[in-house]
Image 1 (spheres, rainbow, N blue to C red):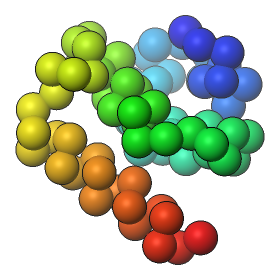
Image 2: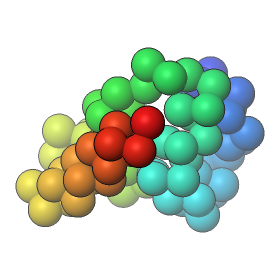
Image 3: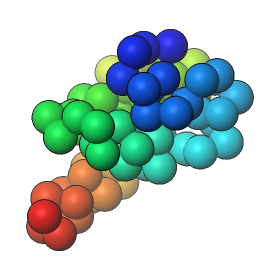
Length: 74
């Protein structure tokens, strides 16, 4: 697991799966405001054990909507 995710308090793949990509991303954003949508996609890909490039368009659209909602709130 990467340094940023560990610094955000996620130590194991099991913890990542339990939290989900959105919550894990929120934790990363608290310590790294430059975290981009590709990081969110990568987290979801890690949970599904696939490269994020192979996520379905529906999943990418859902994650993108979540990501954009964060930008609006800032």
